[in-house]
Image 1: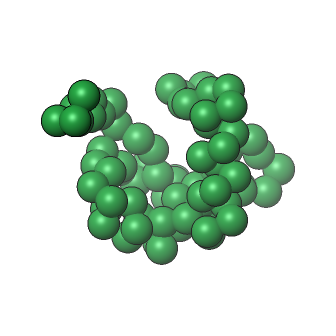
Image 2: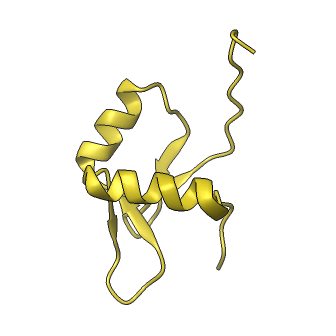
Length: 71
């Protein structure tokens, strides 16, 4: 089942940066990624909300709207 995601150059860039920092990891034999414990901690520090653990132990994002006062 496909889930909402960030696509294109932005998604690829974020994925690469997160993989390099070990915030996410590839799931073997799958296109899916998982958020590591360190990634959950760092994303929480950065104020990224809306992650929840699925029944199979993976993390999935809930719909979140971010509004910046600087816009």
